[in-house]
Amino acid sequence: MRFDKGKIKDYYLFTTDVENVFINEYMTEAPGDYVKAYLYGLFCSEHGMALKSALMAEVLRMDEDRLREAWEYWERMNVVEIREDEDDYTVIFLNLREQLYSGEQAALKAASKPAEKEEEDVIGSGSEGDFRKLTEAAEDMLGRPLNGKELQEIGSWTKDLGVTDEVIYEAFDYCTEIGKTGINYISKVVLAWAKEGLKTGDMVKAYLEKTSERQGSYRRILNSLGLKRNITEAERRMVDSWMDEMHFSMDRILEACEKAGFTQNPNLRYVNKVLENWKQEADTWGRDVNQRVNVSQNTLNKYYEYLRSQAEKRAEGRRREVYDKLPEIRQIDINLQSLSSRISRGLLGGSTVSDMDSVKQEIRNLEKERAILLTENNYALDYTDVKYLCPKCSDTGIDENGRRCSCARERMGEAELWQNGKL
Image 1 (cartoon, rainbow, N blue to C red):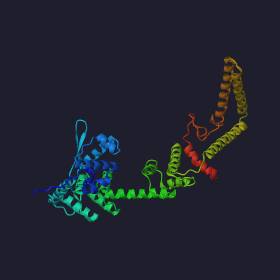
Image 2 (cartoon, one colour):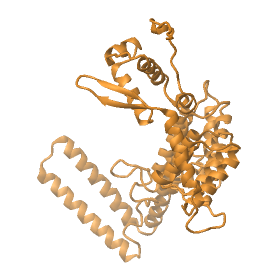
Image 3 (cartoon, rainbow, N blue to C red):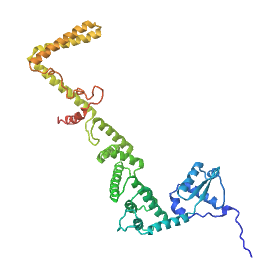
Image 4 (cartoon, rainbow, N blue to C red):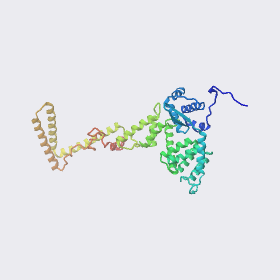
């Protein structure tokens, strides 16, 4: 007696088995079009359908390069194997349950081996006994057993990243505390900490404390602008630059946020512009970015004018003193002024060089006579000159090269006292 069953001729009436391991361990983390490529490829493989990659890309409405990227992604995840053909390639679907079972057995076997040296509940020595203690501690924190893929992932952190068991323990503790118990999230935390060079539990705790403080700063800044949302990655980098590169204090940043609050659309870009201007201004004046200056450029210019007028008044007082004692000096100064005017008019009127030379010689003779009179009467040669506080800029704030004079730093503080009537 023979038994037979009618064959289904239309493959659309068949079913395609998808392993639960794929759904649980791989599908949730993969890009959607990669999953689409996997499922359609699995459908074709189960029913012996050959399909050119170009045609498959067309059916799936994907770019052919994107389809290749999908298969390379699944190959990196050990889900498929790609074999190159002469004009295309073949995709081999691997048995995920077998891989998982093998991985679990290997990890459990390694964890069950006794340590070469017993150490009492110490995490971080790297022995197999410590790996077992680490995974048991992780299971206690997670409230569930670790599967083979998770055990392999934990082992790779030590082997591939050089992360200590102590840091891994802290990662599980931190992630369970914030309710993120997926192995992929924990892996990202471990990778980030490895990049930061964290080696011990104390280093992790210090890093988390600093990170927590910075997170609080982000919230304060957003709240000050009336923004009730999380900070974006671009905004995070911007705020970090204010603190770490420009070295603004939180009070100074909030002061800039207050200015932004008066705009129609308060945002961090406006705050950034305010802080950049303050930084440029601070660099120009050579002061700390957090030093508040209540003096405008107009006030500073007026203070320079005041300094020049005071210097000229003092010089005028010294001249009157000399003229009263030495009337000859007054007459010499009058003659010198007259000769200087002759030179100016001569240059404009086209006088000859010989005429100008005679006038210049007369000026030199008068200056010599003036110097002798001052010296004989115990006066310095420059006693009647205008003496500015800054000889480089003559109290103008601008040096001979047209740049901001270095004296401006000191004058800024003086100007603030001057405008408040304290100087």
